[in-house]
Figure (cartoon, rainbow, N blue to C red):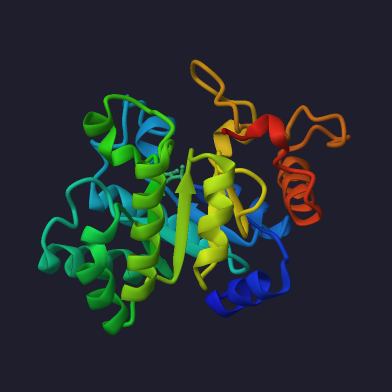
Length: 266
Ligand code: KIV
């Protein structure tokens, strides 16, 4: 079973690790067989499962339901669950909602933001709840960003992102996710912090990689993001099976053949 200690050891040894989003039991079982290291019950379920245009309509009830489905069906992965939009505005709300997700089977709670989350991160850490802080393109802020845009470009934005990463780690964050930031900046952040960093559209130098499961199985509604690779139809997945796609993703990340330059931003 993968734990935070496993991921910390991976970072120390330079072993790249995998994360996939997952929302239901059968896929969670397949990910168990493929030995995917970590699973994220992402609020992306609002888009890929529920058909919304953003992650904003997702509720804590939704997250608890899907987290419980995964926890019953996968014993290998470290399980991360998202606190959804506006469910952690105040500390008491954050504590109550984190407890729901931890009791549903999460091992780590993921929140989106920067240094403004420090007090929350410390409070949860002291209460026995590890946090993963998601930086860069944070989809819950889509209305603030005015769309899904690359973040951290330019010196000022890059310095802020690095400062945010250092601040939340000093406050007690156990993991970071970096989404859609220039690969060079992701490398700097990954080397600057002691905790494992998981990237999506952040280049090959983060400690781990995450993809939305539907994307890496070629089920994309609209434009395919640059950082996505379809592992289902990849010719190395000779059986063209879903389990084969998960195994190929696991192997590709471990050996460093995914992601490549074509999947990253500058
Ligand atoms: O909700 C989600 O799927 C995520 C990943 C894109 C990292 O936050």
